[in-house]
Image (tube, rainbow, N blue to C red; front, side, top):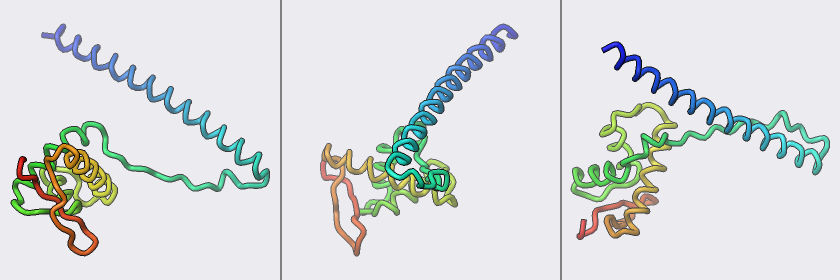
Length: 145
């Protein structure tokens, strides 16, 4: 029993160490890219206050959050039995997946993921643009879905 637990822990540690190394390599590449951009900005304007450029935070769905988004979107549309807008579908996806409904960043990321999934499924003829209400486009299942 102990050998099995130890084996699992060793395997998990090896995986995490690999993720850490990849993350650190990515971090080094980002630092190098920033240094290059700073150098170019300073070539164009030597007095530009590069240090004062505000950081822009981008929240994207983690791969495990995006995985299966298409299926979840279809589930939400099937359960609704009527066309829904992207924000309406995103609300249902958040509930179906048990995500943090209070986080604006999560909501925006889910809405982006829902929109991508819908566009992809529209190409395959699974969903269609059903109607437009105000500025919001409503999506529905195709007759073939």
